[in-house]
Length: 271
Length: 321
Image (cartoon, each protein chain N blue to C red):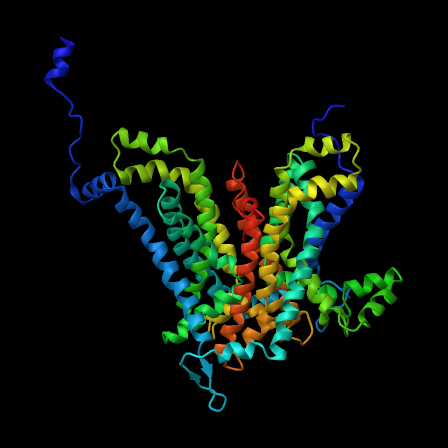
């Protein structure tokens, strides 16, 4: 009997895998149905009727817009900081071997490996010890810290595939360090950085645990949603916001996947 | 003649410096790569060192302070009193409850994740492989709160699960389960069962990915050799597949265990009024204003995870990450 790996899986395995995938996806799809329900007071299923009026209501809610704008600004600035720090760190770690290299990788991964509540309360106690008042920048400080790892992971994976001889060739041909970076290194790692940046944006846009400790009175979109989950005011508006959030985070993830799919499967691994 | 022409205009072996600040910097980096390395490492290390490690030390320092029970002010003097408070019965209860939940969630995720990971690693090819990858990635990256919210909709008393069970004439199963002492409750959305389901759902992708990575490295002919030698599928799984997948499972369990230990939002939104470590931390630092006790509480998951990571490293789990 040939063993060419093309035989099909046993039925029980197929069923178990399919059930597992359904378990992962059906709850998210349910959100899309609830965004159109006419029911205001409860989560009754099946929805008594379908309507699009809640989209208009949500559109006219200033608190949703404020939360959204804060989230976008925080995510944009945190991503920019993470891109700079992550790229520098990955370049240093992958082009040379030096003492303490492992420690640096650990340092980068730690903010995401320890539970978010630890990062959050650690930052909060540092702010309180140093008498720093909560502001936009305290949120950014926290977010940038755990976003570095996503950029770092993507860039390290790309550096690993990029041959060092290209840099040497560029230098041999008379380019100085800056020209080499601009014309040789950057084009090579650009898509990896773009993918890392998108994932960092998605991570920051969605973060809630650390933010609750560093935000003070301001509301990012996840904090707004958390408030609605604990003390619901207008459930249909929450439904619509939830659906929009799913769609908005879907796009950068798909884009990041297509940017990094040939070869390195690092893009999203280890959120 | 050509030789003479070359000789008359020799190119120096070493190019002259390119001049200007930019040129000088570029030359410096070339001659002393360590300077460049230092400059590259400095910003990220300073940021992470000061912002993150500094904060962790601030937290640790706070856990050795204590709170004055009468004035509610924080007494900034070294004491172990706060750690002693951790061993009060109520607090031990919280720790035990959280660790039990984390262990159960880890076991369940491993069981649910294995078939998906195995199918993706061994049978999915080409287009299906990409589909599986995205099928795991999308739920992993979709909004955490939206996922919890979706389960609030599903588990609500008037929600889709109750409706489905009623259609299947199985409502009595749900009622019987809800009337059980510890795991039951008024409805699934205010019971430990609900908390458990949501934890498994939210952390499942973190288990699938490393298990899949471990299984990708198992050669297919190993499984075939095992069955050629007369092993039943069950024996092959027990003696061949499972031991080889174990480092992946342990790697995944690091995530599921650690994330469950530290989470405070899931049990707050879907669960009973009994606290988990995360909730205890949150309420101690927030409403109670007892930051030292909150800090001491966060040391518990750090210590547990320290031991866990040490054990995992010995099992070779880090090669599977």
